[in-house]
Image (cartoon, rainbow over all chains, first blue to last red; front, top):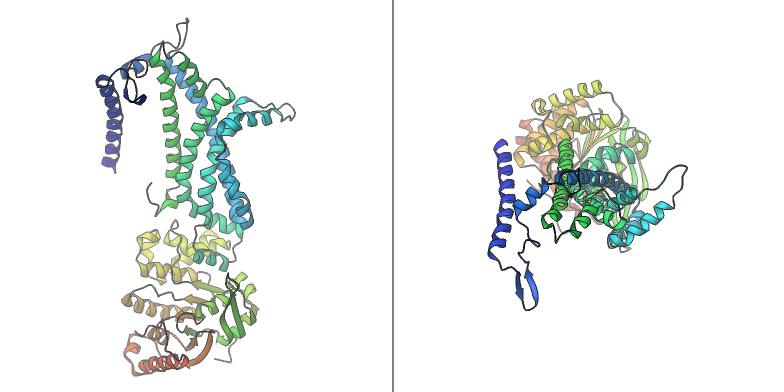
Amino acid sequence: MRTARAQAIVWGVVGVLGIAALWELYKALAPEDGVTVGSVTVLPRTTDIAMPHIWDMVTRLFEPVTRAAGADALWWAVLQAAAFSLGIAALGWVLGVVSGMLLALLMQRWLTAESAVLPWVVLSQTVPLIAIAPLVKRWGTNIHMGSFQWENWMSVAVIASYLAFFPVAISALRGLKSPPQADTDLFHAYAAGWWTTLVRLRLPASVPYLMPALKLAAANAVVGTVVAEVSIGLGGGIGRMIIEFAATASGDPAKTWAPIFGAVLIGLLSAGLVALLGRGLGRFRRGEVPA
Amino acid sequence: MSATRAAVTISGVDKVFRTRKGGEVHALSDVSLEVAAGEFVSLIGPSGCGKSTLMRLVADLDGVTGGEISVFGKSVEQARKDQDYGIAFQQAGLLPWRTVRANIELPLEIHGVEARARKERSDELLALIGLEDFADHHPDQLSGGMKQRVAIARSMAERPRLLLMDEPFGALDEMTREHMQNELVALCQETGAAVIFVTHSIPEAVFLSDRVVVMSPRPGRITDIIDLSFSSRDEELREDAAFYEGVTAVRSALHGGVADGPRGVENR
């Protein structure tokens, strides 16, 4: 076990270093204007603006964000933005998982609900994010309940959950329906009601189906958050930072890469958190094929 | 036997399944049978004779189309709700996330038996099936025979006076099968429960049963009932002339029941 884990870490590091080496190798060997076939560029330009050196990106992280006095170091600003986005993504994930589970339960309980709801669930994912972002914002601002006020970050979380609920709903439905008839017969013979059968049979049986879905939902929530931050115009997160820094790309190319590292960090963290959750549910995952 | 109160009374039962295309399958036609308390009755017959269907009707897993079934004088639904029977299927059907002990305790847990009483009962049953050392193992760590033993222990967890078994040894190899049959005989003698036992195997039916009910298909019906009154059921019985007479009797009943010969019956 221990050696397997150590090996995994070593290979992970080798992978990252490999990509860095490939980057620098291509930058060193390929022509400045990239490789073109006819008038189409098939491989990117290798100028410092298009492909800054890895070490430039890293050293840039430790310089101040702007030349203004008292500016934070870039890595610190990125980390703060990443934490902000991760918080919203986490909220979106929770909302998505809860609504996905509820939809799956509804569809499992009533066959008519399945045929009525499932097509809409699938259809919902064909609507582009940038189309629903202004809608969510407008609907949200129409909510007036006492002193409650709809904030932009809430819109972003809702959009993140919109992407996150889908894999959960689909996989949870499959999982809830996974017990063979012999098992449901057994519970019927025990005169167990719907709730008992759900808690003691269907939910535990759905865990192996749910784990990959929760990971997918986490990745979707992160992507949804970053994109929605841009569409909604919410500052403070990674999404806006990517846009802002891209504007300075010609003068400070290494800086544009910093928020991208931030986005990768959020992705890794959220995947790690879900994996941690999965470890707690280990006994329900017997017989699961490792993904 | 007839003096004791009946465990199961089946009278004039019909069962028709409707297929999706609107057709009808006559699974059982005018089946009547009485199983006395403590009696071991096997249902045997070729595939499609409705023996499993009949057991499912007694278990209230399916409803009758016509006729009536009562279990200990109650409706099948009431008997199911009162947990008057224990049930075991061909597939052990253990829950993979539960340990052996937790699987045996499942029905007790569902019916709100408190933890200490559950543990006492599962200790007893684990000893009975000889799997004390495997209490904390998970089903994927057990052999087929062990799983089936756990399933049988689970069916006995609530001390039912009636056991319904649908080919519980069907998936086991011959060696394990005979061993399990011996164990089942011992378990039944200890508990005194009535058993309805569905099987494909003639020797199995003969070895275990007080009566063997022979069924035939299209539509499923009872063609013969063979009484077997062995004084004892042990390894010696398997070599006994009376045993072979029983096997012959059941076999000829099976062959006589269907003009074009029985299908799906194991003659081993």
